[in-house]
Structure formats: structure tokens, C-alpha cells
Image (cartoon, rainbow over all chains, first blue to last red):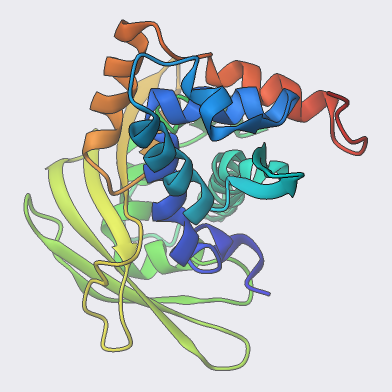
Length: 120
Length: 169
């Protein structure tokens, strides 16, 4: 594992998809709704002033990014948020924080060394 | 603690860290402007960084690679957008391909660093923004104005209260 370098390396492929998916307010709204309940696409479409096809497109973007999964109940396809992926998305900032905290610690260690005499 | 404060803006994917060092602003600036010092702290332990180009001018390029314990090289680059010693540095950074050229498929982050002396110490404020998509901030803003969105904060709340149990419908 690349430990802290995951920010740039391990998640490189999914990161752009994730952020693209999360960049739209309707899609974020769908994620939150599908976290607390299962919805069919037409059930979701009732919430928004847009066509069924448009909602379906948003759902497809979310599915490609791994933010939601679809599963079948009877003849209906239900949408459910994938919490692991959502955690990953929000975990990126935390990875970044960890990375920079460690860098700053190392900077502090270098600054604490005795001067090399090259300047003041 | 060197790090004084951390803010995470999950709407706009911005991380802001403030650190204070017991050193002059010029000394803190050297950690960035001297590639030999920079490579001592940039890479995580076990992944030492080697800076190849280090053109600290506006529009200048910085290139480096980190070497894994197995000897694999991971290339990275910065493009300096603003530099004003010893107080201000802005750059976009990303990962490179095997030859060290920027890899357009990889996410980039934009970072600004400000360094200022305050009461005998030096404060460094670091602001890092994901991702490469310029449009994201715009979209978020539009979504807010339309009032369509549930706050991303609510997502976090749900995630934090539901780590192990399946959520009941």
C-alpha cells in the first residue's frame, strides 16, 4: 500500500469520477435520499422538476462513480447509496489533511535543527 | 503542536491548515524554495522525493519523483501560478506518467501557501483545493442558489452515525 499517497495514487482513477458525480446538486440530493431509503428512478424523479430521462442520467453518473448501486425488488429496480464510496470521497480531504500534517511535522523538524551557517 | 488549525470545506473540497513555526519567514520560505530542503519533507517516510526541475517563477515548472521502497518511481509536477518570496506561493500539482509528463487523467490540486511573521513566530497558511474540474465550484454554487440541494454536511452526519449498522428504511 502507498499509505498516505493514496490521495494521488490509489484512488486516481475514481477520484475524478467521484468529484464529477458529487459536483451536481441534484445528484447530491439523490445520494442523500437514497441513503435513508430505497427509491426507484421514477420515485426519485417525483422530487425534481426535470424529466425522468434527466433523472435517469444523473442516476447513471452516480452508478458509474460507484456512489449508488441498483438492485432489484420484484419488477422494480431500486437505487441505494453506496456508503463506502461516499466515505471514500469525504475521506480524501482527511487523507490530504494527514499528508499535510505529516509534512508540516517534518518541516518543523528541519527548522528545529541547528543552523547550517549558510544564512540567518 | 505546529499545526494550529484545520478546516475542511467538503462542499468545495478545500482543506485549510494553519501552522506556526519558531523561525523567520525567510527560513520557512527556504523549505519551499530550496529543492534540497523541499525534498526532505515533501515525500512520506519511505518515499523520498527527488526534485528535478525547480523553476520558482510565475508559470515555472517543478518536477519531482518519489521512489518507493521497492524502487518504483512516482512522478509528480507543479505549475507555479504565483510566487512572491517569502510570503506567497501558489501552484497546481498533479501526478505524472512514467516519463514525468503531466498525466491528464489524474486529479490535480491547487495549493496556495502564505507565510507571515506574527509575534516572533511565523505563520504558514496552506489552502489546498480538489479537484481538477474547474466547473465544480460553479456547479456547487448554482446548486445552492437553486435551493435544490441537501447540505453535504447532512451526508457527513448520516455517515458518522451509521458506521456499522445498516440504516433502516
